[in-house]
Length: 482
Image (cartoon, rainbow, N blue to C red; front, top):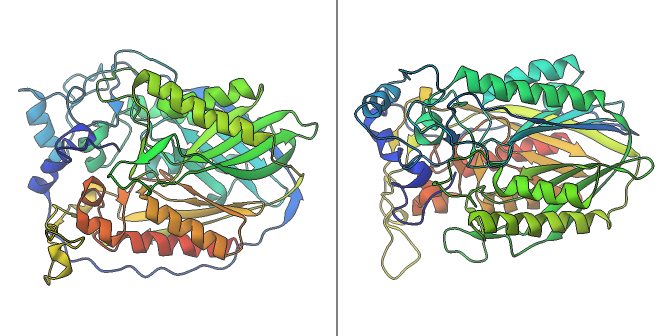
């Protein structure tokens, strides 16, 4: 989720950050979770069938937008302050059930539709289903509810992926964890949740029904003019644009599943209309350039990455750049019918959740912090485990010679680079990181970035070993589909 540069923890999506401290419950100290690699997943090359579908998500009356937790979206007045305090205690009280908004302002209409898009791939050995949502994130509850639908079409848990684009102007009120509700999403509304679930269900079922014999190929390109590191580290952002090209056996476009790391924040906090942000614009450009195709954006390791262009004009620029890259890349990728498909899935118990208040102050004139020299630092504050997911899902899906690494949150660039390097070392032609997948566990940083305590470090919820746990867990599921 986005953060303003200064002050980092009091504006935008993080306006509720200081509230975390006041309600944190006592917990035990943090330790590194040991993860284990499961048995290899049997694969098999088979003739591919593929189907896609797109369904608009219809907002519930008065639904808020998710992504920015401060004014003007958040309301601070005599009514909402007591409601916020109640929410801190774990109880969201809605004084007006006719509107889905409680702590946040209702939306002011729709700028461009937010959608659910689905892709189903079947090679006779495995059936892989991917559901992508124009939302800020995905909850485990949503994945589990959707998986009940996936089972009816023959998709196993390991082969089922639910992803969010991370638009900051998508539907709010759909998260069931307290921390997400307070920081950027608003109190849970069953009315809004059911509309997201219904759109995703319909897209999944329609995609399965639309399956036809298909050809598939995968490639990537480099783009340096669409994103940037938002922490002032010029070279630290992922420039790779990945593309899965899927056509009929006659070459007619079916799907363009593409991957790029960028925050969905071209439209700022003052925007009060639903929008898929720059990701939706990218998809539109691809669909205009490849008539008949269903474009499906997937986000990468975007934790510390911002779009280079902003505002409505910037949104169009971002769409033109990345969408244009995808269209250009399409014609360079060869396709084939015989494809290997398989997935691996593992739940990992995370270290106890804690808040990093930023006690690692920098040592003047050096790149070090006092935490490098003082035992017992960084000082952290335990968080109530009921506020977050304490177990997170990690998943790897193999499509042909490429592995897609599903991460349940927002990894920073270095985490993404590490995962891609590990994928290459395992012999995969490509490794693409899928952030915001299957659940939301906050930001995932390296220990060094955790100690720097920028916004991303302060929003890393499982202590300084979080990044190590994430990388090792993802490595384990990648090994299973090698």
